[in-house]
Image 1 (spheres, rainbow over the protein chains, first blue to last red):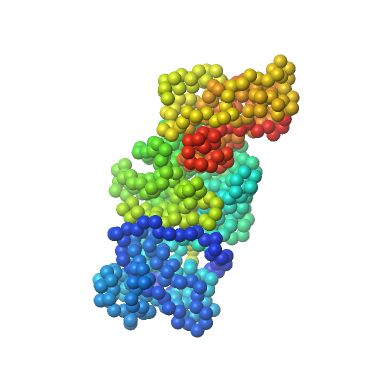
Image 2: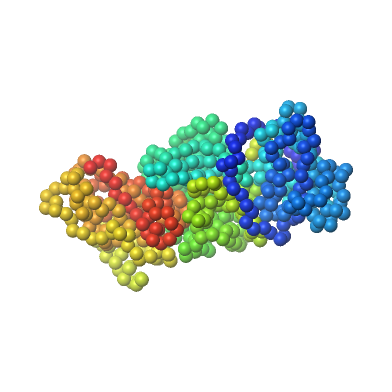
Length: 437
Length: 174
């Protein structure tokens, strides 16, 4: 764990965040009895200027709870407030049935920001298992908190945390001539929403570049839907596909040099791969069915939706073409697959009768895999894995409007959290890659 | 619903309309209803039948004023009751070679958005095939699919869904 050397200072990129007021309204829907109990002790400000606006401990608590793998002790039940290892009394935390305790303190940093020193304790072993410090600008303290949560998560689970990531999604307000669509980017917990692009015409299918700097998406602003790639930082954008017919479902390859698309310029939707430098297209599928929603597998192959068998199902094909192999044999309707980083888990929108839910096909143990249902709604769609595959973000309809949920990818956890915009419809979520420090 | 009868009707429709696509026999979706949206009805082609249509007829002719074709769930088969609409718009396009239409394909909200774009396109193609089958030139028509992005009704029930599964015939040049 070279990148987590104790005492390492993290100089955080400046994040100029607009007000949190438009943030996604969060509330944990269900929890998990098997989750690991952890106490995140409030982190006192011990500096000499103004204390940070961000309650670092509560952001960490919310992150860990949302994963479904942890159950944080409610702040009112935290009876002792150690600020460092010297203050730790293990028997107290054993009595409170906590497996882990995170303590920390917020200090002033020399560059005008804050420095958070934190320590993680294993109560059963009576050991400090992590001790680090991080600095951040005053307006970036949520980023610091998410990175601390990531380190706690990795130390305990052995899997890299994905709390310090971003999500993209589409909002829609108004109707008819007053429709307004916006492609948004926010922190993974829904806070800090920022507009990437606005349009009077529909926007859909956002896809992140692997470096997290660009989004590909479909916009109908030219009449027919075209595929754009936009730099999130500069706003610069280009049209990469505006052929006759459908231009849709963009998905960047792992190296960011190619993009898979669904184009119907030949008369019906087929999967293509475009080399982004030359814009040269390679046709991957050739069938009269609807072939769309390509997703890259870590081995370089593509999973996609096709109704070549009568109903939409997921198939896998080489980007060089050839005969696709059918992946899904359960569920009347399977579409919009998202693939875990290791290529072993596939989440998709599964329809049975009038009910559409997020289904998980887990092939970790080999064979044809195990199926689980991750969501309880009736019109759930657009799943998107977190980069560590611990959670899935998806779109649902509730009370006549679109909302987003994050759900643990561990079906036994059932932890789900709603991320709802204050008004309008929220849809088409896409979980971004790990951020670069 | 009597499935055999439905299939027979579809088969008849396919024979009648040269533009049927390859997937004309599909399982009826479990949620698909039998209700017919209001504007779908057979009506005689207007008074201009003997002569040539003019742009004014688009606003006055009882057939030309109908510009929406509805579909069953996950289907792109043109239903026989829309034959009259197809025929009068085909005649209009033949009478007015400079006229152009967009065939805007739409789907209901169920299922994935990109797949629904494909479904909307198929429906647009089905209408285009039928209009061509009635004699109009394909060069006068362009299919645009909006998938589920432009619902005319936003509730999550079959009544709404049936109104959204449609192709709108939009004249860009009259």
